[in-house]
Length: 203
Image (cartoon, rainbow, N blue to C red):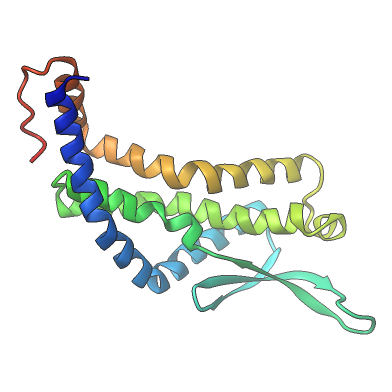
C-alpha cells in the first residue's frame, strides 16, 4: 500500500477510534433500555425453537433471567424451576462499533437507525442460543433431556451459540457498514490501487 493510500485508511481509522469511546459510553448507559428489547426478541426465537420451555423473562440489573418450565430439586424435598441468566451486553457490543464506523463515514442519521434495527435479530440470536446452550449443553444430560435438547439438537444449539457469540457480534456490524458505505469503501480500495485518484469520501 502506498503512503497516500495508507494515510487515507489511517485517517479513517483515526476517526473511528475517536468515535468509539463516546459510542461505547452511550451503548453502556443505554443498555438498560436495549436489554428488554433484545430479550423479548430472544424470547420469541426460543419460543419458535422450543415452545413452552420458558415461562417468563425477568431482568436483574443488566442481566436477562429466563424462568424455565423445567423443575429442579436443589435439596431433598425441595422443588423449584431452573433459572438461566444471560448477559445481553455480550451480544449487543457490536452496536457501538457499527455506530462508530457510520459516524466516521459521515452517514445520515436514518442509516444509523436502520442499521441498529438490522442488528437486533443477530443480537437476539446470541441471547437465545446462549440460553439454549446453558440448558441443552452445559446443564447436564438430565436437564437437556427435560428440555428436549439431546443428540443433533444439542449439536445444532452448540453451533448456533458459537455463531451468536463469536461471529455475529464482530462480523455483522462490519458487513452492515460496508453495505451502507459502498462508495466510501470503493474509494479507499481505489486509492490503494491507484494513489493518483482523489479520495473525496474520507473527510
